[in-house]
Length: 78
Image (cartoon, rainbow, N blue to C red; front, side, top):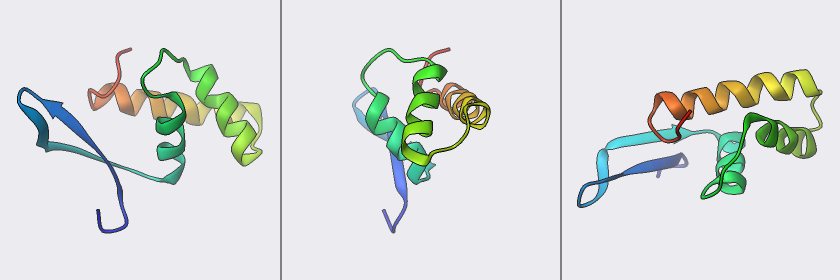
């Protein structure tokens, strides 16, 4: 929508347009690669390293922050 990537949460009777989460391009990449399956932050970190060539510590920290935000928004379970 308007150049933004959005996750629209499901509601009781379909999409809940009051629960929309904007994400950036790297979050979209992780979302597309990991959705609809069990994953841990190590999976997300590995993908970040492969795609962006960042060091393992930065990838781990970013993956933990990404997963934490998903949990906080109710998109993923801890």
